[in-house]
Image (tube, rainbow, N blue to C red; front, side, top):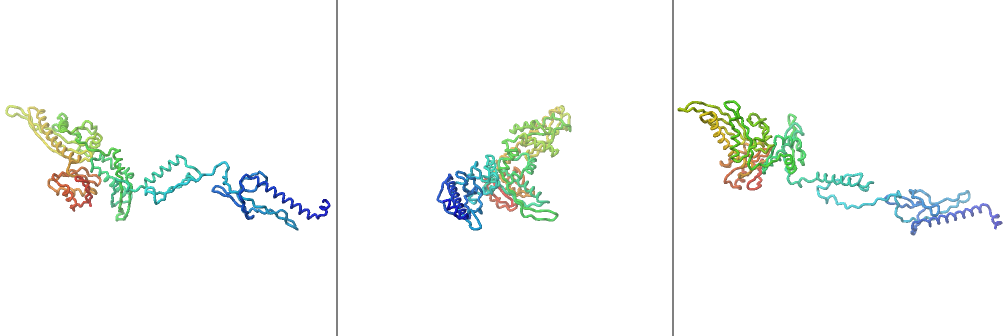
Length: 525
């Protein structure tokens, strides 16, 4: 055998050696493939030009061949251009090439990029089509870096924050039609600029909305404070505002059409919380301010205020004069508007409904004997006015005087004051009773709420109502904003006939809405 090999040329011996080496390498590769723990499905031969890839949603990896039996190599990114043909020997004379047999690629569960972190689990949500949602829930959800699937899970605090945000957005986008107590006012206003016009429209709308409270068993307190409050805080009660038809007028003026929608529920709830809304007492409470002089000098010994309070109490009207801390009780409030304003504010804080004020003067007219007796003559003169504390309206005014004689000045003065002040107070009590029952307590035949009223319209409205019958009496409950609420005493009037007369009126002309047989809501055209 050795002789035969020696006889073989060197070239052929080299080729034989290389063939044996290639066979050994193929055997080694086969053993390594058998040592792989993955299941071996039926392999499908693939072209040697590319190595197949196994991919999933998280990673893309290629399973390589092992170099040593039992050795596992971590997944590496696939290289499409990697050759599958190994060039074994290339010489000037002959090139021997061995093609590796394609290895079957198992179908396995994809491994994650990092072996210690589990792959994210997909969450399936049932999405309601946008067109099928309620109108107030149709809004675009904003992207969040904490949304599931974006790399992090939402914490409970973030979930709660998103829930609140969605609720607020739904509330902002809720249709105005879903709000029951909503009223809209249209104005065409001229002004220096658009901002000024919108502020005026806002205040007019809110005051008119507040004035509607007088149509029920309520009235407003603190009117001198209410207007500044609405001007400063009124925007939160406006659900929608629309500005249109902008026109430029001469003298650098602007004209706008402004529409304001007021949420009455929110407005009334806020006004009640701030104590701007009150209900009338069954019997009004009175406070008396009286300036008293004797022979031109201030003197409280006459006791005029005490006499007036006594008669009011006898007529079942309580008096809270002593609760009034300001101004002093011995002044005439009609001397200045400031005094009356201070007294009205103090009265409203103490649940006083009516202020009685005026001036009383007692003087000696003569003194001398009659037959054989000496007599002193005293005359009392008084002017007394009665005001509502909520609006400052003058309810009644009485001027009276009375003279009396007695043996002494004090006795004559007492007789004059007792008679005159009792007469005055009885008269005031009757006027107050009629006014309160018919104006504030809704004991009249009809109550009208007229919207869109300006100051210049009042005369024509009252003339129209008085023309219905000479027996008709009008009691004005309030005129606030652009809302006039009046009570009508019309004995024997038929509701249907009264309604027809209102609808037939032409100057002014109304749109009439019948609430019931006693209450009518009108809008001026």
